[in-house]
Image (cartoon, rainbow, N blue to C red):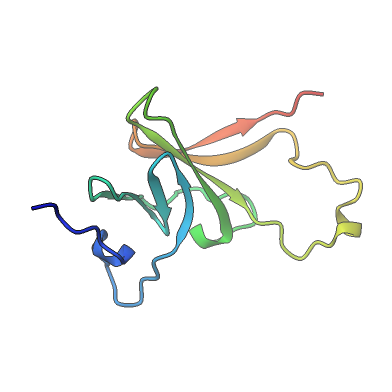
Length: 126
């Protein structure tokens, strides 16, 4: 008998608290990035991300960031999660003339290979 495919994200992930909100932040090549978790719906495996020790400048918690998942199963079974801060409270006129991202820009990256967060600089080529 073929197992049923769950219709709710909560069926894949053990929730720590009844107030936990399950929402998809990003997806990449079959993996889902939820709030603080990476889920593989095909295998029903999931990993809770550890707290990021140093969040990007101007943010207080994980939800203050845009989070992106990078995963290519043809290259490696490992994935990375990148945290980039939201740009809040800035209209287009305020952003004119402001270089984004600032160079160097340091982002927080979680590596499943290393099992930890690290700061990674991005330097814009001029």
